[in-house]
Image 1 (cartoon, helix red, strand yellow):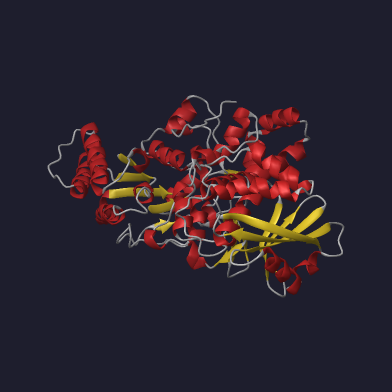
Image 2 (spheres, rainbow, N blue to C red):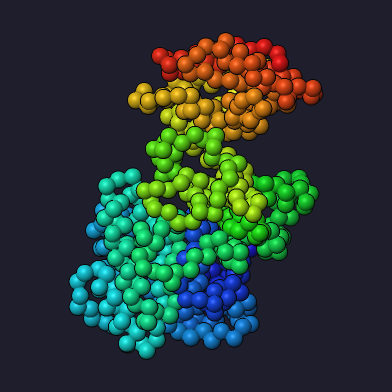
Length: 512
């Protein structure tokens, strides 16, 4: 089996006999049902391949679709002029970079079709191209746009954002005005930005990002995994000394869990699945290709409490498009694939990490960023923490943990306990312990609960107080009550932060 790892061109996959998970039934349904679409999906989720599939389809390359679902329909495979814009190919640090890309792409298509253009401005030159293409070929034009939002994400926190948005707004206003010349428009990206920000006037744009009908348009379903990768699953199960059911459960734990509608089936990230079977190892594949630099910037710029990131409930409005300057953290994390829909009660959506790969990798990056140690904290270091905690060696545990806090940049203003708590939360999530942050009881909120094989640690932090104060709060609020009476030992830990040294100041413990 040849896996199309990193190959995003439909024609190459089909001509070179790479594995292809057939999505053409949904593609056919799309083009028969409407004209102007927008789809938001995380990176490395097959958006570029989908764009390439549309390009081959509208270019009339019927032979590439032999044996696929769309070949069994009444689709006529007529040829249309196709314009495909890939904004992932351009680095935009100012508005002129974006204008330059649009002009260059316009010129290349004009040259390919033997068209002389006379207008200089980027948006009107593009308008001229579309009109002249329709006039010359007698066919309406297909417009495909991949990673439309990259110019915005590249400038999310600098002064170029407003002029870049202005260029995009003017461009899509022209696209809207060309409606009678256009056969089909498909726009993809990671983020959903409000129409007023980018798609000004495109009131005919249909957003299918959370549409139940198209929830599986990108990605791999469980059924597709088992039918297309059956031999690879058996081979990997043999290497891992696992039964078939155990192997499927492990693959699902690591890589499944994306959900693009509350009633839709779970989806695998295709890049992770292909990488798993290509390399035959359970590793963090997708995350290494999509390190969330701008997401970490967003968390820190908003002084966001990491403990509120997951197991969070939001209304439908929070899942809608937003202004770049006013992005809600959960909405952005949902769109970028670091959170996904995990439940719906009729009015609120619950969000959480889709799977083990994303959760572990994300907190690895968070711990590296917040501690200033860099991404990839290191298995040796985390194993030391686990070993000390499991052995009850708390002096060694906190000494090792202090290495994280010792590297926090001195110019960070520590207004309250949240920064420290967030770093604690990231570290303990990273090392795979069961952790609950701000656990609700009937008398207050516990800062942190850590659970090892035989011990439950109930921890309270104090930034502007002593370790004794922290321990007293555990007693006063009776935080241990809900954990008593079980098989595990309960230990109460009061921990203080030394604001002067900007590190752990000490701890005090008693049995609970």
